[in-house]
Length: 171
Image 1 (cartoon, rainbow, N blue to C red):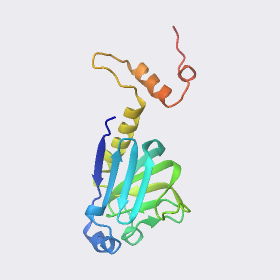
Image 2: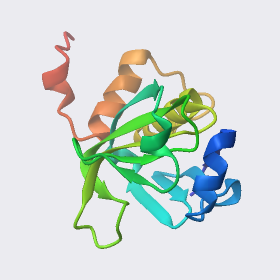
Image 3: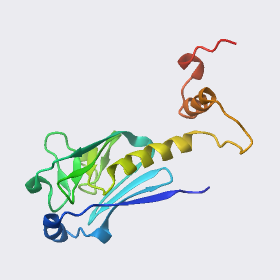
Image 4: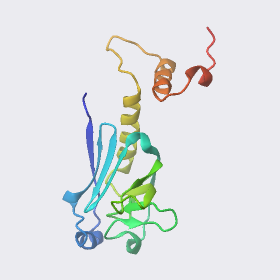
């Protein structure tokens, strides 16, 4: 099985570098990787790992307060989300179906979402969706032509949905 891997670097803003370095967060130790059907984040000493199927939605965000985001991974006290920030300008908020561990290794604190300041948030959002859909759809032979509804039916069947209840098919 071919595993596609795509790596996304975090964009470091100058004033974030020193606080990040104090917690072991450097450009070499801060990245997001989509590998096959898995999403992995490394942020200095912190790690997050979850299946792509656990990604519910993504949204580009930005305008973060430096004092709330610089340095280590941050825990939101309002929603328990985790933030891996290296700039105040923009990032991607990723919401999960099932909360994940990240801020501490035992799993006592689980996060329903994470924000990560990758250099290209739109590419990360598209990559996670495209790789998840590619995994769901059955391979198509080069000579095979598949209509859009057939392809959608394959996705729904692979996801465990009863296609006949989703579509009214008139033969």
